View 1: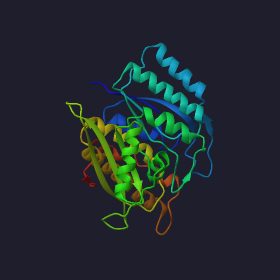
View 2: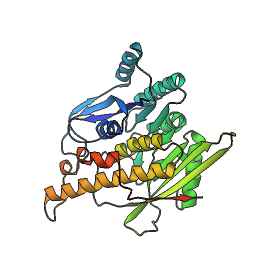
View 3: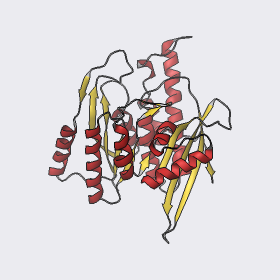
View 4: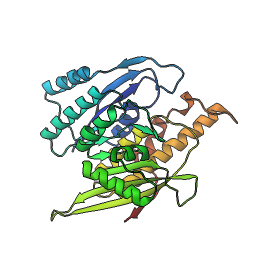
Length: 307
């Protein structure tokens, strides 16, 4: 059965971020991907220079209308990431709602990009749009700790706090929540960070059950761009293949991330030379070279089921 994804994300000519990070891995795993590029830049903004264009909400609507006029707007998934514009985000919500009316089983995967480490890096006026409009129509969300705290108004200092925050996020709409990174102490020491996931299921008798998992992820001393976009795409893929098994879906997703990042950091250090920090071009994700790991990742990150 063909599975089609509408991915509304940024595009770069050089490198891997947004749709460039999501499309190839999803296609490798058998998904048809229709891409709308929210921006078209020469490269990501971590470089010294970048040029390009930004798609407006009206232009997004025009592209969507073109798809609709040809009656080829049947989707199984919608995937979105970073945006800086409230009207664009609201147009995305309108599109998702219309697509869900046509296909009630459509799954919307959203990375609610707001900020990290205690500060926002998008305009403040995006926050209420995410909280009140986007998250309620999302099915799978991938916030970091700061974003999860911001969306719920509750701080995370213990695993119990994190579970409560994920439950609050469930109550807002999404059945699957993965907090991609947190400041919680890892049981494996300070070279690991903790991620947590929670998935609600409705049993055949109508009752609800929730599976929660904890993942210890090795830290890497480098700044990567596009990893969040790759993560959301892989979580989409692996929850599709394991719809009632968040533990396995997370193990697959985090293992793909590990393999891609390790390949990237090794290559970057090789290019930079001994004792020198790799540059942004050298740290572009080694996506094509990781094709086999994306298709069938060796499991290197195990998830623990928590109560």
